[in-house]
Structure formats: structure tokens, C-alpha cells
Amino acid sequence: MCIRTVITYASPVFAHADPKALNRLQVIENKFCRSATDALWCVRNSILHRDLELPTISKYMKDACKRFFDIAGSHSNALLRVTVNYEPPPSYHFVRRPRNVLNDPPYALTAAVESLMKVNDMTD
Figure 1 (tube, rainbow, N blue to C red):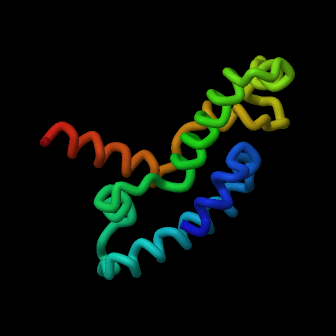
Figure 2 (cartoon, one colour; figure 1 turned 60 degrees about the vertical axis):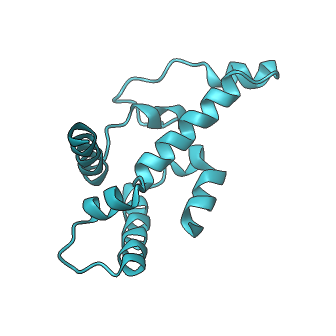
């Protein structure tokens, strides 16, 4: 929870952090989850996240960014609304803008957790 409060505060900025840095944060979160549940080493991280109903850091940041841009898009300040609406640059462009994170493909752990959640929803 310590990591998520900082990420939530500046999710559009953290969304463009180096993937290695985000991976390090995910490793720390996985270790906390493992120690909090007293899970064995053989339990997959995706199963831990599914059982705890805890999204991965990348999924959490995407959701936080989406909420931020939804709120900013309907804000009463016209200047803020204008900054939210823009055309994303081409995929080969080297400049990353905060809203581009919503178009990024999910990481492997996020995809695994989401597929496990879908399987659980189908069996319920």
C-alpha cells in the first residue's frame, strides 16, 4: 500500500517510468504479498494477485490514469479540458505522452492475472 499511494498521486507521470523500474516495484509488491499470505515459493505471483484481488502495478496505473483523464475531461476549467484532448503521436514516435499509457499492451503478469480472473468468472 505504500507504493500505491505514491503511484496514485502521480500516476500519469509514473506511467512513463522505465519498465525496469516498474518491474522492480512489482517485485517488491510480490514479495510483500508473499510474506503477507505466508505463501510458499511454488505459488505463482499471478495466483497470489488473483486470490488477493489485487491488480498488478501496471494495471493499477492504467486504471488510475483512466480515472484521472476521465475526471480532467469533464472538469469545469476549459484549459484543463483542452489539454486532455489530443491526437496521440504515431507509434514510432519517441516522445511518450501521459495518455499513451492507456494504449500500451499489458505486461505478462497483468495478462496472466486477467486471464485467471476471467476463468474464475466463467466457473462461478
